[in-house]
Length: 443
Ligand code: PHE
Image (tube, rainbow, N blue to C red; front, side, top):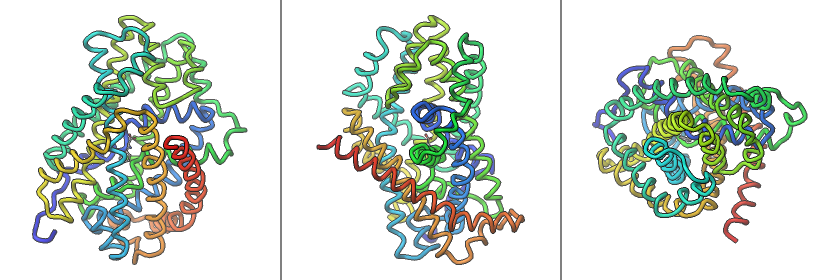
């Protein structure tokens, strides 16, 4: 640990784009639309905005405050900043990262397959049959392996030469693709009804505990919170960078992409009368209903489908990179491995953990519930209590490069009281749902 020069970002923009790359991914374009469809459309969107800014931004800042102060990955950072007895929370983060990447990579594999299909042959046959046959089995496993291979090869390149370089190209590309798609979707006949569903809240649905916890869980997943990804990325950041400003920029960008994804998905779904399918939403919704629409559009649909799945793949890749980086940097910091071995060892282990997900959608769903929803929220909850109540002078790190003392105090009390209170409700709800799912999937 000591004596080795720690890697760092080349530029501030590099850090922001890499962190936005971590945040923007399948969560925005695959999970967000179906979470919104499932829970009343616009009502969910309103609560989601609240969760991103009232809960997500403060938690992200809490991660930054620990990561940059320690300049270490989660295990060492928690040990140094909070105390040795808290290192196990870092181990939990690493385990959560492994579990998430394990199934994330399988879904990312589907996006690769769909991109290639649009490019080489066009969507054909029956989309639901195609999904059934391509989402599990040997084909799914192959794409999972290829996707992990690409992810590993970028993480091996290092913070600046691998992660930052990839993000500088991929993130602007993704923004252009998604905005282009949203503009195109606006011209579809029937788009108006899609917008209405997406943007006109039904007040009755606003205050249900289920919508609330769904929105919070989605915010955690989408902003990459609760498992040390943001903590790790901030550990490579210069001392004087403005942390609250970065947290705000990253969160606004992440929300913008999710919002635009909704502006693509809902008009298309409603234009082709596929709303019943998305209402009965499941993991595969987007991979079935969108290709159905694309198929009906003929050649234009092929091009749009290509762009859509390419954007999904690009987003998934930069997110997967951050998940693997948490595990890799922990191996580097704690076991003194060199980067190449660490990334390869971690990547292969995760690849193996993901194999069951390539053969069963039920298992994939279970990993998502446990790691992608429950463990993230628990990880964020404990971190807030620690930063709020145990870390000595938690404001000192956040104050560098940021002078608004009143806002800093507001942040501290939010992290001490508001966030834990909300997350307690969420943990109860999500915990219950996770236990039920374990029961139905395994027994
Ligand atoms: N935020 C990523 C997405 O929305 C997923 C992710 C979760 C990445 C947790 C890192 C950590 O797709």
